[in-house]
Length: 58
Image 1 (cartoon, rainbow, N blue to C red):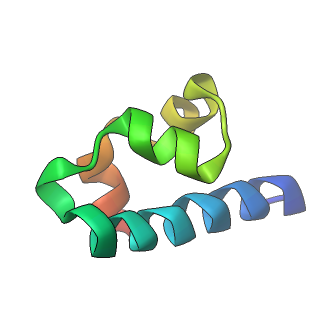
Image 2: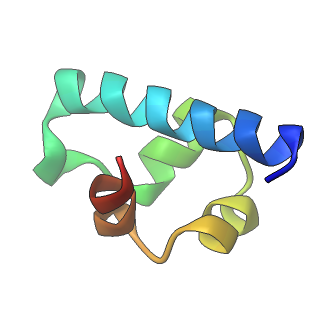
């Protein structure tokens, strides 16, 4: 894994953690996470199939 990919995943996981505290799992959308992590939709889907995938790899 290269540094750019590590940075992206770290941002996704940190943002996911924040959103879990703010909204709870059931109310987090891919759009919420994409915006919070400041990544593109295509970047999100290159790494994950869904929010459920983020949770399972968290």
